[in-house]
Length: 331
Image 1 (tube, rainbow, N blue to C red):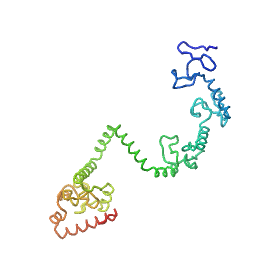
Image 2: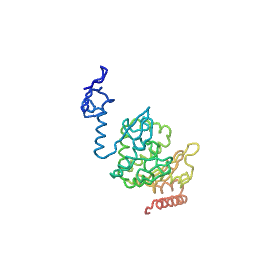
Image 3: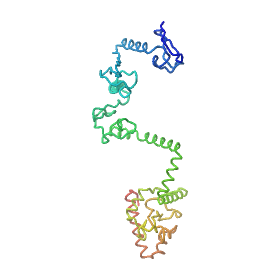
Image 4: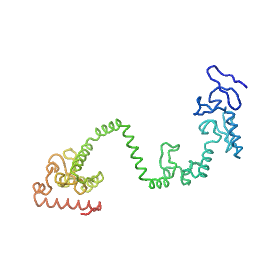
């Protein structure tokens, strides 16, 4: 039995195979989590010898790792690389990174398990799913922040096909992940909303009016399908002007602003739908202020008279018919 010199602070451990007494450190023993001391009972030399014997018994060519002057030789491609984690997956790995990926690729192909690892060749990149080669650019691969080159492992064609095949599941997972993020970042969301509200006060007022109208519609069980896209389409149709008086909305002096008016008031059963919302001026002598919750025909006759009211009603009726045609809705 031989004994190795050791400092008093480092405990000693006897190898169960060769019976040598060595310092109980990872320099001499491999790690093993289910042991009390976290170390393998055999030393590193005996463990390596046992691995080679098992490989020889199975007819597998043993992997030979050679080191010299801070360099390590890959057992597959027989090339010398710096003995660092930049070129080898681990301290004991016999294969460099490219050869290790090729080995895993062939192993997974034989087993038929999952996509193969990524492979590069100059400025070309291989899709891990269909194994076709493409230029390593955003034209062929989607962006992925946590990958080495900032690109996804799959090409765009495979990525899109996978999304359509698993659309419902991916949406549910995304929704659940968003909810978890919101629960963990409540204060951050509140701060952002407060700063956004201070930066865009006019938008906040408009959104609050929309929310109030939707709340009233929900309470009265009325349809509520008006969206921001419908608002943009409506403003484009009326050229940013009031649908009744034709005055410019959001004028230079800030005297009048755009209001989304329920042509048939909510109090009279009017829904919040694209064929019941009109842009009216709100402010000094605004149409929206005087209309309030009145019925449109009565309010128009009192405001402009029967003859002009008939022209305005016909113009608005034409707009509502156009909206139904755009949405493919029955009249």
